[in-house]
Length: 103
Image (cartoon, rainbow, N blue to C red; front, top):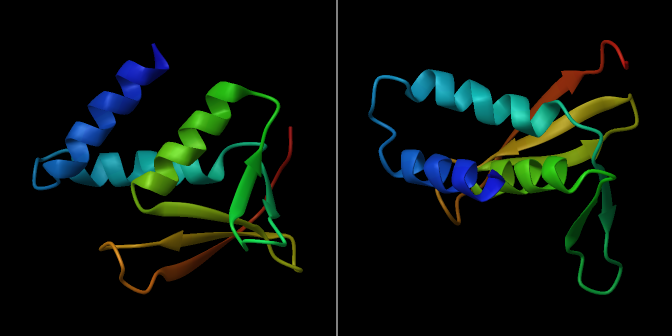
């Protein structure tokens, strides 16, 4: 079921000019913010590694990264850092979000 959702969302990224593009962008932002994924750096390759107790949650965060909304982890002020890449190979724009509540 998740693969179907991912496939549909990948299809939608190709047609960003559709009327629901703003809602789609907000959905991707929520995917990159609302989770319990932990970010680790591989010391040998400097690659980002995501760890999660839920494989579904991990798949959604990885899809958001694939779509341009990359979760970079928490900064020293306990804020969530997201990198938004508008085009492949372009320099990402950094967004910082405060952590309000943990349930």
